[in-house]
Amino acid sequence: MDEQRFNMSMRKFLKEVGVTSQQAVERVVREEGLEGKGKLKVRAVLTGEGTGLNHVVEGEIDLG
Image (cartoon, one colour):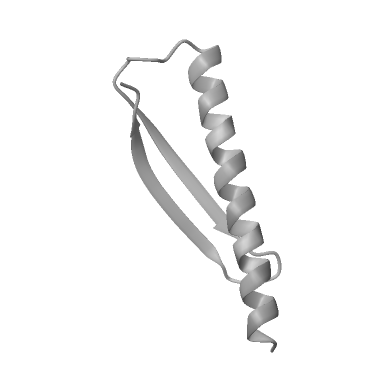
């Protein structure tokens, strides 16, 4: 396996996940008027087609 190629591809994917996820959260907070209303519980699930990958990250975002 070409480690450098793998790492670059992984970074590109994770950057896209981070940026698009932030945009999605910001959009729903704005559209649903959630600003200043406590915390938003969130969960991200990462799966890999054809693999046993099933990684779950849960957390809270403070809405100010």
